[in-house]
Length: 148
Image: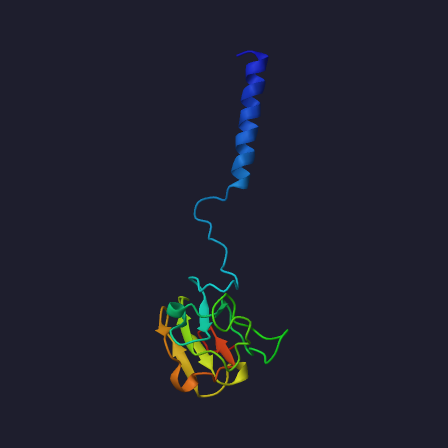
């Protein structure tokens, strides 16, 4: 192979190696969901209306524990999306929930993930109406211990 041929081969190898650096290897986990107003796998979601996931309600989607939802803007966790309740602070306003996480979530009526009155939501469980906890929510825990 002549000098031009070797140079072409070296160039092609360098380009191929560079391309491999940009493409993540197989098996790399996808990025975690973000708070985008869509209830995705890996999230715990609260809805403004009963059966919120079926009625196009605004949603507050989370991947972590929240010790205090907050009472007013700009420091509260709010419902997102285009449905009813969008922009409203979550505290004392959630009426349904969906746990799309792989672990149990506890929804509390007190801040700091405290108090005996809580709703335990199993993995995959949809709660169409939070019943006695309807509009009585201030925090939630995704930790197996129940701690925030």
